[in-house]
Length: 238
Image (cartoon, rainbow, N blue to C red; front, top):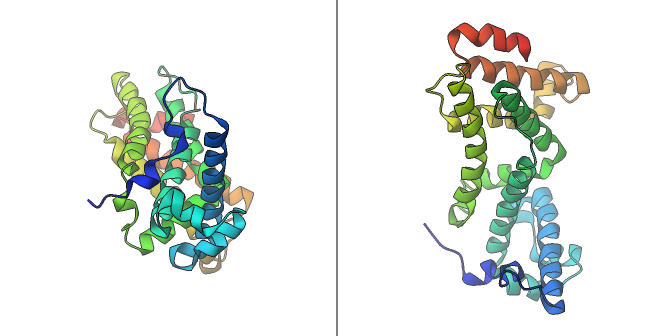
């Protein structure tokens, strides 16, 4: 796997633990954060190829040279944007309060969180669409991508294990498969809702349609993970 240069990982946040950052460190971090935020918007709107360094520096009220100083290159900045996108997803998910004694409700909470997060953060979908057009060649160079995915899968894995221990979920369910099912049903619907609305002759972006689809995802996932004798009961309780 290709590696990135050390400059991008040398963030002021990596200061020695327990020591308060100085004024210069805080200013440097603010500049870096501003560039990252501006780059997220530019890349989400124009893609990697269409997003220009000059656009990003202007949006960040900074200078081109600062982008190269903190990130090394346009590609490394794009990788940092993708990493930050995943990091913010994990951070938001970590705020979920999941009851180990209520695996069904916890699984529903994760599904609603993912569905809601996709809606509230449209750049999440557009950035990943852009990277998939590039066949994932940028994120493949990330040193942190696997770290972020592992955290998301582990949250779901704990819920599934709790459900299996209580006899309501199948013990052979793979957390990765469930995650992909939830992500696929939510991601595909939202990223294709405009063309599908025209194709199906329905307004898939209406509140009613979106609420309905959230329930479809929940019903589908619960049916897939439930032990046979409890599948119907779980669907009724959803």
